[in-house]
Image (cartoon, rainbow, N blue to C red; front, side, top):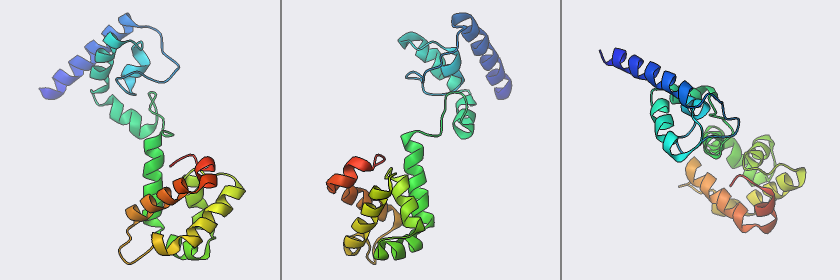
Length: 166
């Protein structure tokens, strides 16, 4: 019964949305967030309620997972999650490479923080080596390491300018 009701609501919402706004907006999405509602509903305050309702049917979850329906995977949240995952998976390698100030995983870590030039990667490696004892200790976890590295990058004037994803 619940599934049938949800199906009827979805069809009704979709049909109503097609009459309200036949255009698909190419730019971003409104306050309702990404999802089918952002594709069908025009971006204005009143219609955002309807868009949010349409998004709540479960289509938004699919859009976020698949990167469709205006739900891109290049947002800042996704980038932060990628940083967290990378540090967690590569923690031991990072620990070793940070002590040396160079290495493949350390360069990748720098890139995930937005340090894209060779110069900023080299500066990142030097910072990691110079600050190693304050970044890594017996109590350090991957989450604490990520936070501490971001803090050190923000303190470094040159890195703060060249590393965009802090």
